[in-house]
Image (cartoon, rainbow, N blue to C red; front, side, top):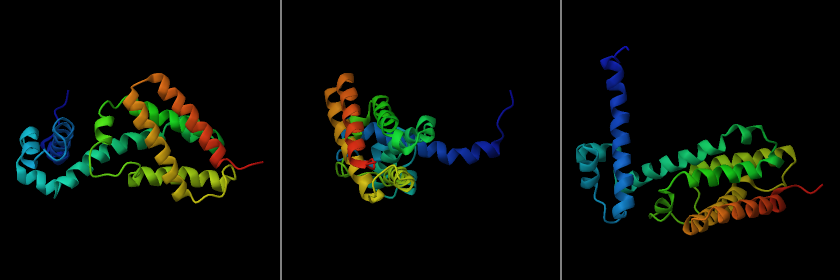
Length: 196
């Protein structure tokens, strides 16, 4: 097996250190809470200097956003699943909602993340909001969806899923998750689908 060269390792080193910091911050925020976690503790847990943490993340709020971005990436990846991309806008509701619920089910830390300040409940992360709006815009353009404003509709759609995920995670019931998926699919169908 060929050893990686020093240049390749040094190019990856900043990302490796960033990953260590974000992982340590996630653990600390979830175990101690956002308010009680100090940047110095995150640095120690990551095995890096406090200066490096501040260089990567100028404030503790920026560090929390980096942790949130990791979770947002998981949900964005779920929206790119082939079954969603291959479906017509009219047939996307169930695959989208199912993918989001499956992602939440495989992210045991999600409940703790939802409870961390300062993000407001129901406020969609920017990239996730943009992707949902783009999916809705495709449906409007194809004529499958009513002529709604995709950006505003994305806020409503995200809020519905956010509330249902919070309830499902609190109940920790697979039956609740299935029921919420069914209700969300039905609600989205009545709300978004164009009438023939």
